[in-house]
Image (cartoon, rainbow over all chains, first blue to last red; front, side, top):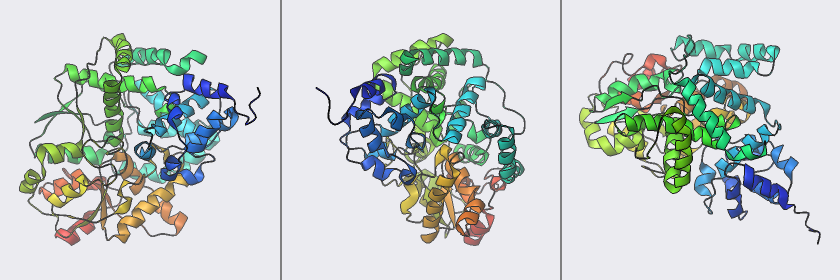
Length: 196
Length: 292
């Protein structure tokens, strides 16, 4: 019989199977405490509670294309407050990772920043803050990069003057090649890999 | 007491005043620090955009495995993000032995193995529980009497596990400030988020978070704000002029690390040990006004 409510379980199954911590939403009772506790709730198109309902309703485009999944500040307030002990934050991170892998680009600047952060870890084992900012700025093209550099030049200069920005690029860690092997292995074993 | 100090990437750059002040002030209390050989970045709180959950855990387990093999002392992480990423692995492998096995399959690619025997500690935890406020008080030469400080706890130094302090009403930083002789002002926004790593890409949204924190601290009489997180320190300090431009406010409040205040109270050098010259908004004025 057709489901008159329009529920479509296949997207929920997709999330349970492929999204890190995705199966945790089975415990959600839609109380909304996560939404109430979130610092950026006002800027979210769908707060976490609604994201979970949309997953259950099979609204794939709405969920993976939503702004909210990229707007987590990782403050763990929702994790602490959830009466069903759902690691809400981890689910949001898992959804963001999955959405980006599937080619969705909500909040492009946050996505570029996060991706470049991890690139730094993978490339040299450590993050060089100056290089990170520069690369994230230029990820949107040359002119956008120049505009950003000019916009934040004052911050950069102050940090340099106060010895809080390294001018010499950070070196790779000695064990970088084995670190990469470990991380490659982890990505192979990771949940999301099964649907590449 | 010996510890591994995992200071992470930020404390060598934007959070340098944390590391510069932490070492002498904590060593003065009898702590001895070792570096984890060839440590790597923890991935902080934004790496999920580029990495799967397991890869981030493996990056952290690599550091723990090295520390475990090198002597197994408690790992002290002053940076909140480093702390939470490392302690999260520890917590989750205890609940899920399969995860430990998966992590070790990955670590084996580099000939490492983590047995899960290490303790990961925040610097506040160690100061409060291993050293204790009494010993800190004994070491104080120049009490910070009359200095009204808002102890800004932030998020990841206590949430979500609450290992050493309440997740809802943390008190440890206030007790440590009081041990230094300072007055810790009540400050409801002390556990509100500053925007963390999202501040840079989402500045329009996150400025309001910082504005609310600064406003609350000042409304409660604070003359400066102390913190134990390089991300909090950065977000609260370096964008104050932008917040002023945006909201028509007049913030000019110094943001210092708890360890900078420790170095001052311990009578150490204001520059060499307390690293006050690293601060963008100079704290010397309010400190001298209070303690002379």
